[in-house]
Length: 576
Image (cartoon, rainbow, N blue to C red; front, top):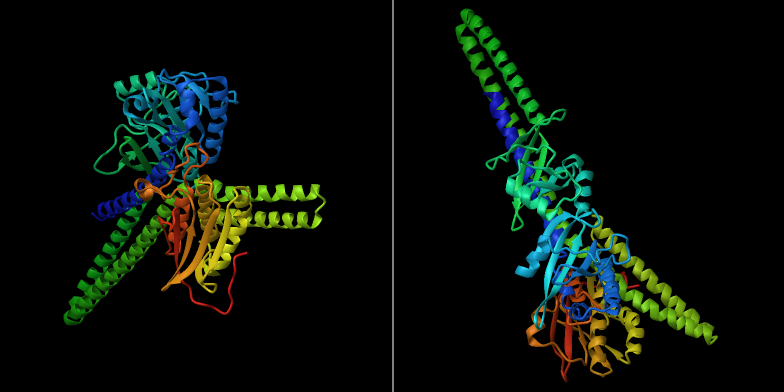
């Protein structure tokens, strides 16, 4: 009885641990997929891509190959390529590699047929050209006369395997047919999770999903999954395992995780032994009490009552202590789970933001070094030295930015917030974009109506927000042939407002609500991925700030940054 109760409790506890692990792994898988979901559709809006699909030529193929290689590098995708309506690959990011996709026909792949028929497709398989597995995302590209082709992004999901392996987790991911394609246990990869159906075998062979891997010649991990609870897994030469699985909709994948069940059995045996020992002790005590009762019945009855009360109270205290320890442990695990889930969601965005965070100072650095070279040729040594100093300051700023992003991604403590003079941060941002403004013949002015306004922020991150908004304002103003941008800092109650007034074409009402969405951009040439305003909004939200847009007086647009004011302190840390 004691063994059964302890064993059932241990199994329930093990099932809870597996559920928590599956929840975290589910967030990791979904985050890895979702951060690339918009990319195929974005590729289909580029004029170079549309031009190649409409009328292919060697010059256009070369241009699109370079563009796709640049997109794959910045987005950190394994490969990006374009397929014509017949399934033939016209251009690819790996065009210059021996494993290039160019010239291969992938019309038999489900991601191609699904995109043609339904507009979008997704599919995990081993590449028939490279032999490297990956997750394929596809999107149909339409032209005025109908289908032009399909854009495909191949994503490497092996980092998930490394995370599971390094954490010592026996976790895996199987496709809808039941073939395990990702696992922290190498022996489980490309092995059936359960017995395969004949229709699934035929489809896998037809699609060449796992080309070069003998997925049908290996025994399944389990005979069948127990939908009502844990599935027990036993293999010769390996300890028994308890497995739990969950479906990832709408893809039909099965995420599963296993843990050793032997400790539960051992713990139940220990509990049964302790209960048996206590029972034996109680029997001996009862026998002793019976013998003593023969001599002094009243005294032994009182001692027996006292001993029973002590035993009951001791057992009750032991249960209370054990329950409290278990509750505290579950609370810690729940908190760790929530923190981990939030980190995983952020990492998907942070990996795409690294390139964008560094690209703007690099542009300013390029202009500064060009100016230094010009001064050197003109023998203006003082100006050359000044330009080189500005370049070094930009390098230091990029180093601080990269260090901040690396600190966040490595689970270090959050970037410190401290009282920063907002006007000084605006000045620093203006200095970085000044060369860009001069090149575009745009004049920048700063009206500081609140020189002592402070905000509790990180100086580097808030400057990045101002730089993003200034560059957008410069582009908009220059596109209209105008030359004036005004930045104004003022105080409104308990908040500071930084307003960026440009002289551009303004913001149409139909896209105003989409301005800060990830990957949304009005640039049709593919020069940007549309991350600047999304990143700026996320940074401001970390400091209880906000970003809004309104029509500017006299035409153009006005971007407004709102930040809560911080209290003045004796020692202020200014933006460097």
